Image (cartoon, rainbow, N blue to C red; front, side):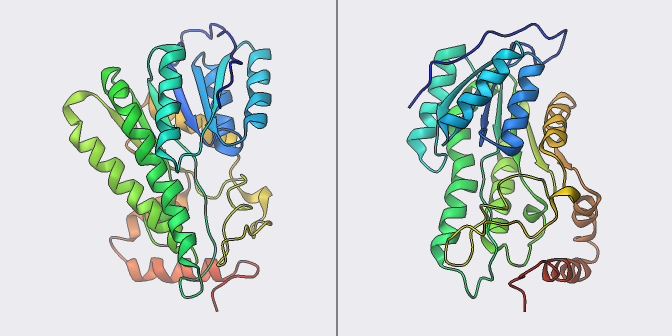
Length: 284
């Protein structure tokens, strides 16, 4: 289902993002919502994609009130046809695509011994295949425009996290996919960035799947200690502007990426200890 609600762009200074077309998945809340607002503030033509039309409509109305431009389309990224329609919608509305922000994702919290394998299938369908499908249909336009392909990932894609088997597996898969796309297009001017925000105050943890596939509901972490979606959104734009390759926003993430090659056993122990301290941790 497609909405015809979009708003005319205000001219936001001399930003490199002005009049650029950006598709953002998982745009109805969290990092996706914040990125939609930030791109709009910079003068981009924003195409929001998510499953919740009502939430996206409200965000588009607020972007309009601020002088920005946004449209939206109902999209389940685990469905290839939805991802194709999403890109076709953006192109029919604005003529092309300059940036694709693969942000839609789900998490999990359960030991592999206990988890229903359907949970892992769901994680791969959304996190990995969603990225693949969206990239497949947007890539010709991104290459033509020498644009940016972005994957919003996690430290779980650099080092396995206990209790997050499917999440880590899906993010490792995303990293391998995006890194290969980067290499295959080295001479075509395509920019590919993997950004790992660290723990962020979003709905993804509240909606994380437990062993039986139900949502955990309450986050095991204190929201006030987490990164804000606005902070992450600003870094997405900064990373695109500076053509960053990999951007880990926390020192924990940076140290993980470094030390996993030097003292991997110590990194294992550190993450086991950290995850075991969470309330109701599945680690025994």
